Length: 396
Ligand SMILES: *[C@@H]1O[C@H](CO)[C@@H](O)[C@H](O)[C@H]1NC(C)=O
Ligand SMILES: *[C@@H]1O[C@H](CO)[C@@H](O)[C@H](O)[C@H]1NC(C)=O
Ligand SMILES: *[C@@H]1O[C@H](CO)[C@@H](O)[C@H](O)[C@H]1NC(C)=O
View 1 (cartoon, helix red, strand yellow):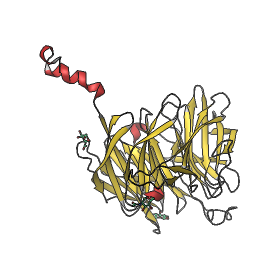
View 2 (cartoon, protein in one colour):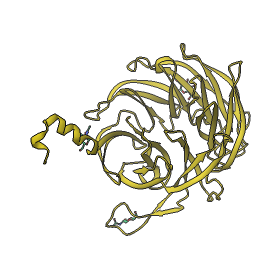
View 3 (cartoon, protein in one colour):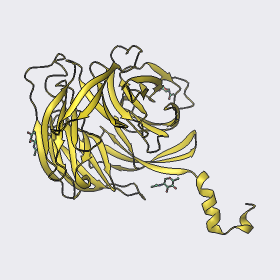
View 4 (tube, rainbow, N blue to C red):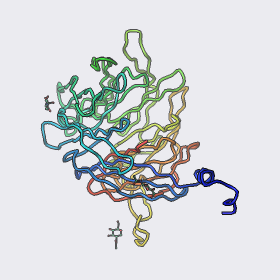
């Protein structure tokens, strides 16, 4: 206030900016049939407000995954029990948070993950868990989604875990750092399908797969571009492992993989009985890998309701540092995810926050993070999301 007399109003406003609270939108899906827009306003390093500002039910019965491409949001409807699922496109609004439906297209049954690829980001590749395939779409015009190609697989025989491996179950669509290859971990088929991608026609060509240990159930994966080197890490749901590979780009436009790392999802520590590996993600600075482990209830946290003294059970988010030379991971920290069954979590762009979706508790927790050490620090906000929250992304 002392400066008022000596500074123009504009200059004063500019001075105030760095310390002012900053707001970010998040989009969150729930198996209750909703896509919710949240407004996160960080007010201090340890506090934030998190408010629901819009809800859409237009992604269908079981929204499972979100992909934000510029102003457009793509949502998958897993459509449990149906032969087919859907890809739904929306326009977003930074001012109201409201989603406006643009188009809807049919997929193979049970879509659970999507990734953008191709020239100008015109392609969207989708992994379809329930009915064992992948779809690619041309999304150049988000209001007119065009199917490009599909692949589907059948198992020669059931896998070692016949309940979960009764058929192929593609679980994620992943783009390599060059954008030329699509990888799809298949939980039912114990392999990662590999495709080369045509940047212009958006068509995929299936190459030799990366085989996973029998009964391991590869679920998700992440690439790490480490200088000249490329590493690829897979989290397995059934055997609860992290398997790392060194990737080579071959002259014949295929990929080579050499295993360089394997451990349980807890690194050197034992994995609790009944656990199920979930998400794996790379920090924005590419220095840390974090995984989620579900069905453990191995940690206790204070109740988010401060008037309630009953502690809550939580599953962990487990962080590792990456040795670029060897590909080995070193356990850095085990931190409670903020509830049970953290199916999904994501980093904000700066790497200062993690949004953690506790599916079984219907809670989204926002956790602060130390960028230099990779350590998760404290819960800065949380919100109840009706039904099973299963995907949360920052709109950045
Ligand atoms: C988010 O919250 C902040 C702080 O309350 C507010 O200034 C901003 O307008 C809100 N944004 C939206 C899209 O509601
Ligand atoms: C519907 O799903 C089935 C199997 O899930 C698939 O064979 C078929 O191609 C899908 N239809 C469309 C239009 O994608
Ligand atoms: C306190 O929290 C526990 C665990 O979430 C819950 O079961 C219980 O209903 C809560 N009690 C009250 C009074 O809200």
